[in-house]
Length: 194
Image 1 (cartoon, helix red, strand yellow):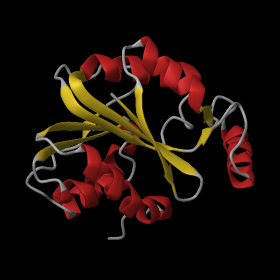
Image 2: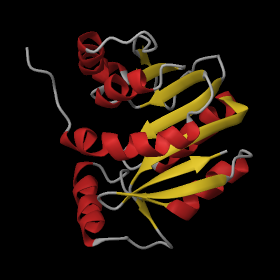
Image 3: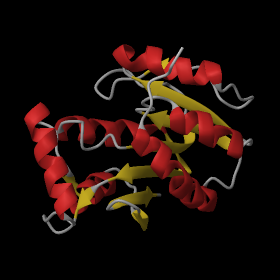
């Protein structure tokens, strides 16, 4: 049976892995928010055997995620669980929280809620790693990002590429500063908050 497949996840998994190697250097638990198809969890988790990887998704997306995880088992890859940004979050604390291409599909209030809840669950010495496209100084960083933003708005006006400064300010409100800003392929960034 064929699995749903994300070409973007296939393209960016290698560059994301290179950056994660700099930060996932201590054993601990990782919460992946919005794990999508599960391609990242299935490919990345075995490369970090000391990290217990917890992929999460909204209930309607869970079957696709579970299919990828079932086809790619790993000792440190936990069963998928339900997580809505606006709902209840796991009670435990995490050394790492990781999310890919979620902030531009969440509404601004949901991004704020996600940051708030994640910062509550993040250990004091933990990292929150956020991958995706971001505007700089209120402007699109490329024409492709401008076109992508228009496409998002045709789906839902609440979607859209977020200003990096706005995201940083939200983290700062919860005691987490921008530790690093990594340029990534296809006009994306990987932001690390600590």
